[in-house]
Image (cartoon, rainbow, N blue to C red; front, side, top):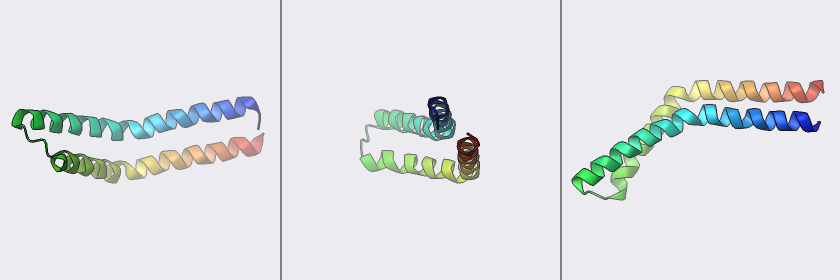
Length: 87
């Protein structure tokens, strides 16, 4: 495995992490911002009030996008194995 291959796979791996993690982080950001505004407006600062909506959003995004995430990661893994065995 040459230096070019390692750098290329590392770069592609970081890109896959961004593509796969982006929707999850985006959903958590939107829900967290909404909960924060709601907590600031109502002055209810209970940690459970903030945790439950974020956990629900995380589970919903993983349930809806789980097959797509697994497909992207499996394709990346197969591509990595193919590139490592060809060289």
